View 1 (cartoon, rainbow, N blue to C red):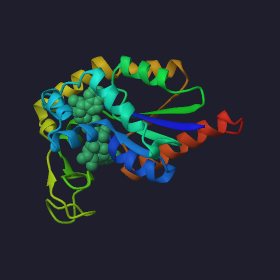
View 2: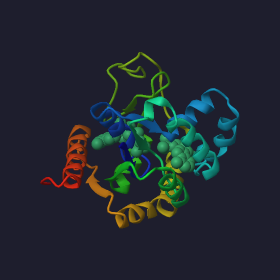
View 3: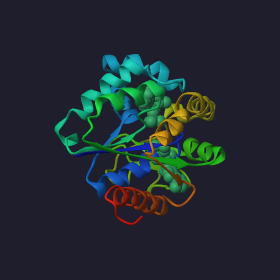
View 4: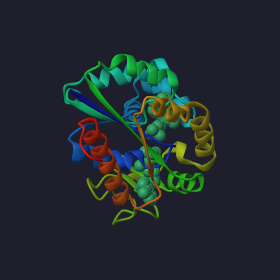
Length: 224
Ligand code: ADP
Ligand code: AMP
């Protein structure tokens, strides 16, 4: 049985922060489509050049480009027993394509991080990323020990171009029109669990882990 865990939530809700914790605990590969695109931008690939304008203006990269990149990535050996998706799917056609690609022998669980618009704005506009290892920091909520330097690898921290407030607002608009309908898509399939993302990162991880365990035990006929 392949296990696929999907983290849904608005931009800045905490998906990447939680995915890093969950993928270690669950032993699943962490697949973040935003990180894959940023890697392509950094390496000036053809895909990166195609994606750049969409990303920097806060729009979504067209589905065909995202799907090709995603299916290439999950075909790698480290995804054989399962993977954790962060930032994918983001549109209904992406969700439909994923569903069609996953065999019946796949256990899919979807967790939706619920966070207010006010928190989204302060989280995204204060976010810092490491150029070296993609670790995630926040100027106020998770500052590095030494300003501008990654605690994990000593790499340089930077602010994402699309984390300027005007672009974050556009990304939120896009989230509401394109991505929010996925909550209903997965609720209808009885796969979705909503989690309060307005707690400390460690507390959110605990709640996500118990939500995943509860879904698994109810699938197996156990107590919730
Ligand atoms: P996403 O992947 O959903 O865009 P991130 O995980 O990158 O979100 O988090 C966005 C910002 O919010 C980061 O700067 C991160 O450090 C911060 N953050 C994440 N989770 C929390 C939390 N529970 N409380 C406060 N800040 C958080
Ligand atoms: P993220 O790091 O998840 O916030 O993604 C950064 C940007 O990459 C998004 O604003 C989009 O432009 C692009 N992107 C990432 N994942 C997807 C996706 N699944 N579909 C379309 N665009 C995406």
